[in-house]
Image (cartoon, rainbow, N blue to C red; front, side, top):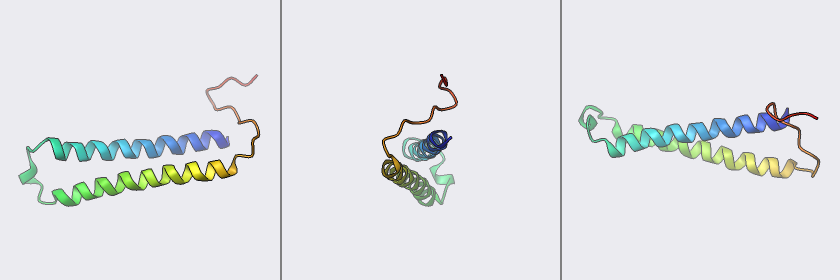
Length: 83
């Protein structure tokens, strides 16, 4: 169960980073509609903050899980067979 929770958090933070990258890329690559978005810099700043927060959480999770690793065998995930 612990391994599954950690994997879920990793996927959540990775998805948040991908979402922020997408938003940021749209604003950088598509100049269409930029004039219609007076808060463009704020939107880009929000996307960058979201990406940075998710990256920080991934790093913190890696550090915490490394500290908790006591060398015991890992639990199987939901998708691994339990023999």
